[in-house]
Image 1 (cartoon, rainbow over the protein chains, first blue to last red):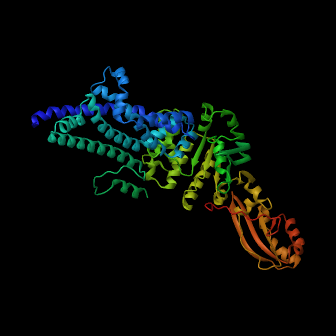
Image 2 (image 1 turned 90 degrees about the vertical axis):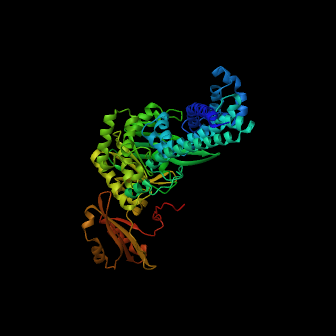
Image 3 (image 1 turned 45 degrees about the horizontal axis):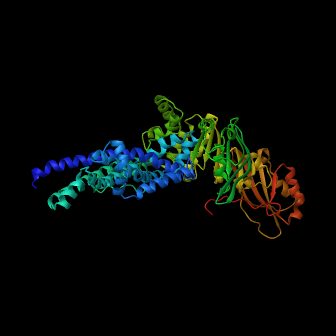
Length: 245
Length: 348
């Protein structure tokens, strides 16, 4: 297969991947963020302490997460047909991708939100803030750098999952790599696809780290933050600290 | 302004019950700075958290500005609208400042006003006014991470004042600061207390805090208030641990057959030459082991530790003479005296 044959194939696959990953990430964030926050709030000692609800949500999340994606995709076929009207194609793939990613993201959100200092919650309560105020003004903004890192991790994981979604005819880069590279022994095309995936994933990771890093630096928080792997002559953050001191 | 009666807090974890507060009665008058002092684990933190009901008391009532907060609390663990409104009228500052790192200084001060639903223009006007009041007008655009500890606490104080509270609760506000900064923050609290008529309830483990700004103080031990009153009342109380700790004088007896006496002067008795009178009248040699004059809670107080020859039984008459002069006399080392209080943090 020569380049002029490969190009339309690859560009279409690229768009398919981005389309599936984009939508499923969006749904995972919309669904996983509240779920993760609820896991923290309903826990023992939380503002909405409800041990039963906490256990139920936790178990649902665990079960969904323990299911291999390919099984989840098959198990959800009925639901997928009900939502999208089909079980084949990229729209149909978004359903299991999103449902697989929601609990994954929720756990990451839970970890990020737990890191927020209880003192800040107490401060807002002492001002007369209610639970919703605490979520909106403290938990989400204060954990934002970690939430961005969590989103990056979710996106990268979803790109991996889309390769499997290829088995239901969803297309995408992973699908190309399997069909042409693995099944038809077109090594060259396979390596090109893998190369593109590597570039895409690096770019996403870089952008996510950059955003999280920028927020971290603004807030000037110490501690384990996402590391930017670019060598820098001088850290602007260091200058700020010395000025403040 | 703040009254607690029979305030009790029992924590239960894994079947064990820990009594943090054991029937605390506290009365803070309007416009005063009231210090609660005690070692860690004495229940100070639980007490101040019970005042705005961040912590639900197990029993007892809390009344702030004539409003019974415990009645507003309801039964559930969540704070209802009424309680939240009451809280917004009570400012609180924290040991670790508790500023939101994602917000600028000005936005941090605006936060309580956002919760109160004030308009953007009003919020920023009020925030800048308060930052000016605490001396940080030039830092409004900075982030908390760029500030020193003292500056952070100033922001914390400005934030606590945003809702125009009548009462300020201070939870070890200076404990994370160095001595110099501590003094400047205490001075600020004192100024605010005077300028705004703010009632301040503070908890601390540092005697210096009580000494420099408090009008009244209470000593807590094991969940109970063991001593309380205005500073002058405490100093006038024989055997008061708080008074002894507020105003320590050193010096040990030089021999077996000696009587050591602490003489406390306040008011006009401070000007009379009592020691030379005593020496002349009874023809005894008096050595002075230690003496100091200090300002405690805005009052001039002198304290002297003197040594008389002979045992206590031999000195009943001279001591009676000193008492007649209107001086406060504490006999050091008598079994009726309690051990001097040492308030130390970090010994656990």
